[in-house]
Image 1 (spheres, rainbow, N blue to C red):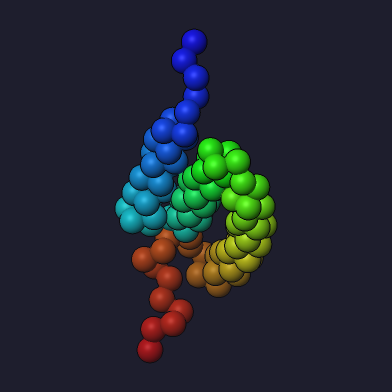
Image 2 (image 1 turned 30 degrees about the vertical axis):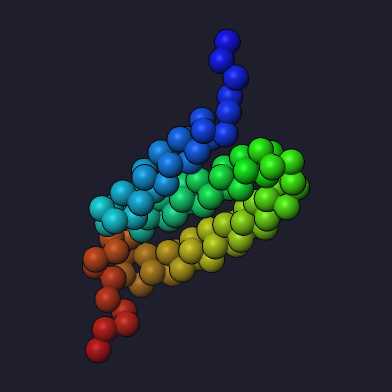
Length: 102
């Protein structure tokens, strides 16, 4: 049995960051884009907790709790905006929403 080291957590975090970034840059559906942003924030949280554990310092874990709280607020506001846009435009495709154009 191999021990799980900080490198394993960094590899997982890099994979989540890559998947999230590809999702944000390539998808047109706003729901998928919001989920990809959540993946990126989870990658950040894994890094914070891994380095916090490696350095025997609790500050990273406390900061991860704040990032999770911010992600919940972002998801609530984002879904509220998404529902309002869907009621007005009847679509969730990002390239079809042009409310701020002249």
